Length: 337
Ligand code: GLY
Image (cartoon, rainbow, N blue to C red; front, side, top):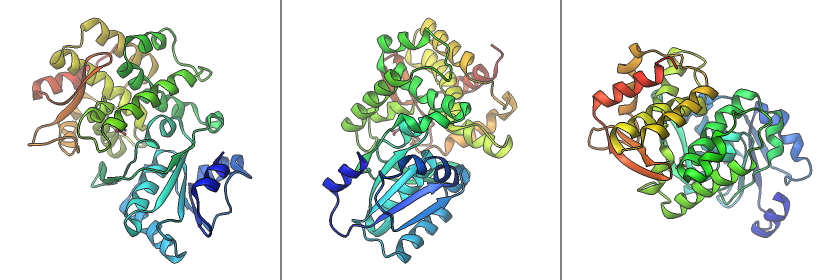
């Protein structure tokens, strides 16, 4: 499939550059034997969020330059969210925009990160503080990559699928809550729903000015939890684990601020609590969590902005919440079941 796409969309003399990390180089690249074109060079990252840095982006630019890559050569990002975010970011600035494709190898990459053209690196302890919108020319999603994925990585991706099922409305959400997640759970239907939701929002709002922001449900608190735990509770929460806790807090805020009904709020947060671990942080961390949220890109006018829900399938975005409710939401996240 990749081969035939490249035959159609490529051009004679096009060079291919491969970006992987040590894990995807070892475990995923062999699964593509015979499908990828012969590449000019491969850049192998250290796995993990620490690679999503400006320093690493600079190394990528140097690498592309040394190999005389042109903007219409192709960068192939083979990996999870770190690889596609960093590779996409490097591609967006290299010679004002190099062509790239994503081959996401994690559930979170397939369900969210690799699709929609958001790219970025972290800066100053904050997630994605530098970034751009630069769309891949294609995304190839193959469930075979998920077969060897560790359970915690699967669960992390499951959080983004749950977010989209809740955004998709009652009909989709009711199918999900019937069963606790297990590694064997068939995710095909959920993945389809997640991609349909995401693609429909992205098509209406390519650059995140309106409805696309609904996809950030759980992410204002979630990104702060992720940053906090990376520095104070290493190795930190995985992105989806942090988003799951963020959704618990933001479902609470949705109940207090945008009118999500109590029964849906408790059903949704109860399901998340049953499937995800308790947070490693405590109520004592609230001040730092608020400081981190102040760095969030979604803010404006000095106020923290949230993407919440009025109902399942009925999002609200750019919602300002009073500090007292935010503190209550953090308390709700850390409380015992
Ligand atoms: N991850 C949310 C978005 O792509 O808009």
